[in-house]
Image (cartoon, rainbow, N blue to C red):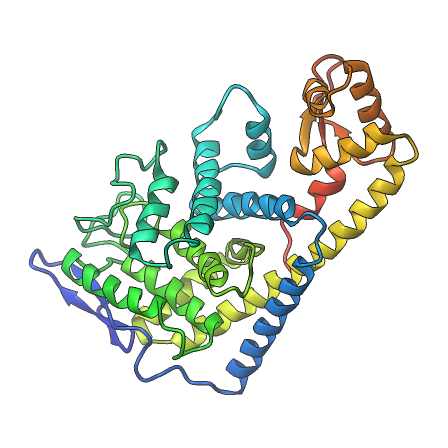
Length: 381
């Protein structure tokens, strides 16, 4: 770790000789510089967020759309941490009676549960350290980090770097516990600050500061990214978590980490904030575009299904909630005979709405490809 001192904090040698970074207070001093580029990026990000919020209000069934976005964000945020799992695997697990099949799927399912818990908890508790701990508890319960104090801030020193590195050779060492506690208290005050900075800039600072503090033994990256969605939701900028910021960060991972380190080493908050705002604009535009396309797709799919009858129309609604489905499950949802459910699925398949994914003659499973294609990894340029 390189010794440094900046408006973001300073490295301090500890008793055993290693260097740890002690973050400064937020908002930073001197304050954020609003040059022409910053103002332009802020305006563009706010405009894109506003357009997304307006389009989301027009969705015929926003809960189903939002549920898929939460799953997608969970997959992407977990992939950044090296947790290899796909959206299809998570959806298939939900429809399975066998429970969670792999540790990776379990971690992503936990992220979905943690997100849903956090959004619901905001109805009764403001975004604060207590809520963050509770969300972390849901994220880490019963998975890889379950022995690393789920729901509790760390009581020992941690560090970041290549596998096998030590405190002395780490890429970055977060603050020791006493300094961590002080930084967290300051961060909580900033979470409640509604006047000093525009919200989108506040989101950028909070994410970076949380990652610098690194208050948990595991799961910091995922919680830090989730904080953005929770804050936007709490402030009613987005009533539903429709952004998957992790896609932009995943596609620009190297630049993401370089900007975070530049904040720590040189105090370059402005460079990080501009990068963050650019990503916020991009994913907002992509989400808005996706929402519009899904509305159009649903109208077209209903038109196609209506050529056959009520079972096909009802099956479409089922597929939006359960986009990977077998005939037995379709039979239960439609409360009809197996033959009727099979015919309805076959008719939707002939219309290109679903695709059989097993290649088997028995126990066939169908994927709602016409819908799921809108959640492919992509981001507006």
